[in-house]
Length: 571
Image (cartoon, rainbow, N blue to C red; front, top):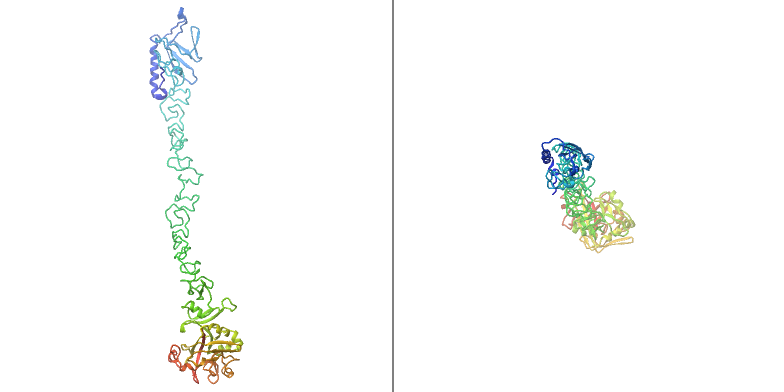
């Protein structure tokens, strides 16, 4: 049975006792005789016997040379042979132990009498029994660098320059030496200690414990060796921002998108609202602010951009749902358009105010738009002013024209208190209901200021323009001055005398004049508007001069009351 020395597994501390025991055994085998036994003189069979000596083999170097010392002296095994009785024998072969009474030999793998060890064919090799079975051969810890050893300091200190494995101290030996951060004795770069004996840290290129990644060239791996994710405070590909917080009211959302109007979050100090939708009519516009009349957006209750609803009126052509949303007060087919008359405006928007309005008599026809004055209150409203004479002769006199100019030319301004006459050809067009309204503002005799208006209404009359003749027929009224009469111009009227004498502008006459748009001569030296039936006939509201003038006296001459303004409306 082969017995191996336990040196490689027990280490230096285990090997020392074995070495001592081998030396002791060798000493005992030599007996008391310290001399040399010479068998060379023996005759017969003993002549071939070789001299033997008990010796102890100690490994000295890695060259394989062995020096043997014994009682009979020294034999040089460096040449690999010994000489006995002149016969050369190879010492590399197993020597015969003369004391082996069992007949065993060194190298048979059995530790026989006189042998300290016997590793068979491994005898004489590093880490095994010596070649002569006298004890351990070369081994780590014997203080001599042999075989595969890189060093051998003969001690059992593992953290000095030579390890207990007879290797120079260095990274990977499992011992932390100077200059090393760690040494776990392996070449695994994925544990806490790298193969180069430094601690595994983020950025070293190896995914160590607690790291999800470690690649400085990978944009998806952060500098903390965590996989990139929204909220890590680092802007990665696919992210617009990343402020590392969970606040959605700052510049960066928790989804790593930049805050923007419409994201459903009200950005602090930037937005006033943000409902996250594109509905401009719900109170919060796409500008993330409440709907306003100057934001350039059709929002809230607006019918078009910044107009209609609670905003100002819409211009022509803008969208509308009803007339009051339009500056023209007329909404037709969802679009703001001009009305054809004051009556059309009143019909479209009952709340349309009295005052100046723009109308278009023929829509898409050739007639231009015109500014007119509308009375939207009296007797149902919708009245269009066609003529106004005023107290000042210089303003009224331009109205004195021939029939041709009266028919085709508008004179003056429709603005309140201004002399005005609309071209006569438009009067019948505007008189669709065949209703007529006269408004008289009598002049106070004291300061010349105006009294409140007196209104007189006629119905059923038909205006007709025939060449040089303009007439009003079939009028039913309690004021005889406008009953079945002709209109007068400087060259046409019921009486040339009335026209020439009283400077008549187009009006209605019975005889010469019951109501005169301008009248001079025996009454006043200059032509002024005047009327005589107002003295005794109350208006449609039952008012008289005493009421509308608040008791103040009205200027009067020969039964005619002077008026600061006389207005004629049709509807």
